[in-house]
Image (cartoon, rainbow, N blue to C red; front, top):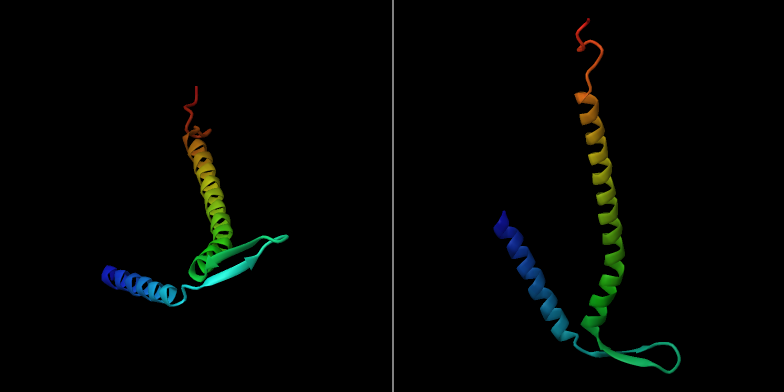
Length: 93
């Protein structure tokens, strides 16, 4: 199974490298005012991918971290409740 996963990523990387080399053209971006920037097409596509993917990934990681913190708090509370002696466990005088 690990071999298939590695093969998939190698084929994907080769495909993207061929695609990038075939489309290595300048694109002119008109920014504010008279500012223009020339950038290569694959670099622009990669940057736009990161602009779209990174916020979603950060939100996902923040939610995952928050859920772990809640789970740890609940586990700590349950551990405290289990260690407290109940009325039945206390010997009668």
